[in-house]
Image 1 (cartoon, rainbow, N blue to C red):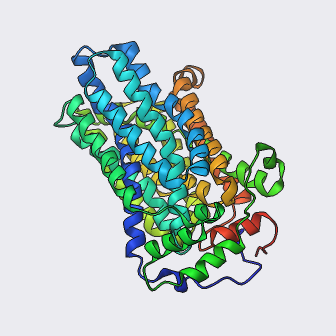
Image 2 (image 1 turned 180 degrees about the vertical axis):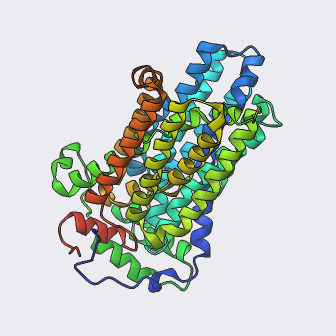
Image 3 (image 1 turned 90 degrees about the horizontal axis):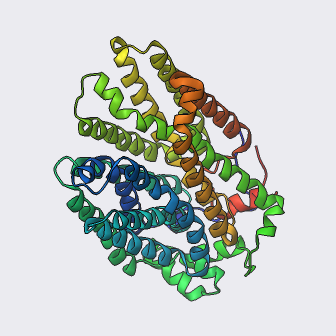
Length: 457
C-alpha cells in the first residue's frame, strides 16, 4: 500500500484546530450548494410524470429534459475551473447558487417546453460548477485530520438533496417542487456573503493579510493562524500563470491521470443504469408506487454516505475505494444473475443486489472521487485540473446514459451488468496500483509527494 510521508517536518495539526465549530459551520453553508445539486438530480423522477400530465412534455421532450442536465454540466465544470482561479472559490459557489435559483424559478414558472429546457440547462450548468468549486473550497479550508470527513459531506449533502426531491415529489406538483428546490440555493447566496475566501487562494493572489483574517475566521481566535499561514506559504507555488502545456510535467500529469481515471470509473461502474432499473425492480417485488421505491433507495444512499463520512479519516480513501469497488463487483454479478434467470420468483435477488450496490457505491465511489480531485492537485493547477476532471465525469455519464440501450441490445441485460462489474474490478485494480493514500496529509505534503520530494513506505 502506498502512503505519503513528508520529507520535511510539519507543524502539528493541534496548533491549527482550536475549536472546529466555525469550520463545521462554513462547510455546512458551502454544502447547501451541493444540496441544490442533489435536489436537481432527484427532481426529474417525480416531476416528469407531472409535466407529462400537464401537457408540457411528451416522450421525446422527456428525454431532452433529462439529458440537458448532463449537457449543461459538461460546460459548467470547465467554466468553474476558470472561475475559481480568476475570481476565487467563494465567488464561484455564489455564482453557482445564483444560476441554480434562476434555473429553478424558470422551471417553476414555465408555460412552454422551451422554458423547461432553458431552466434545466441552467441548473445543469450550475451542477457542473458545483462539482468543482465546493470540493475545492472545503479541501482548502479544512484541517488535514478532518478533510476526509468534511470532504465526504459534499456527497452526503447531494444524497440528502436527492432524498428531499423524492419525498417532496410525493406531495408537491412539479412547479412547487421546483420552487422548494430553489430555497437551498437562495440560502447559499446569503450564507456565502458571511464566509471568507480560502486562505490558499488569497495567498496565491499575494493577499497575506486577508489570508490571515480568513484563517482566524475559520479556525477561531485562539488558533495559531500565523504559523499555519507560513506553513501553507512554504508549500505554495506562487507562479502566477498556468498553461495546459504544464500538464506534460510528471508532477502534474500523474495526479491528472489518476483523477480523470477515477472520475471515469465512477460512471463506468454503472450507477446510472442501476438507478434506471430501480423502479422496475421494486415493481417486480410488489412495490407498485415508484415514489416508495425511490424514497427507499434515497434513504439507503443517505445512511451509507453518512457512514462513509465517519470512516473516511479512519480507514482512508484508498482502502474504502477498494472495499466499495469489490462490493459493487459482487452486486453487479448478482444483477447479471437475476436478469439471466429473469423470473419474478427471484425478485428478492434483484432487491438484494440493488441495496448492496447502493451501499457499496455510497461508501466509496460516490463521495471519494470528488474528494480526491480536490486533494491531489497543486493549488495553482487546482482550478484547471478540477474542471477537466468534472468534464470527464459528466461526459462519461452522458455517454453511458445515451448508449445504455445499445449495450443492452448487444450484450443483453445480464451481460451489460457483468460488463459494469468488470469495470468495477478494473477500478479496484487501478486504485490498488496507482492511488496514494492521502489520509491525514496536508495539501502541501501531497503536492511534495507528486514532486518526488517526500518518501513512501
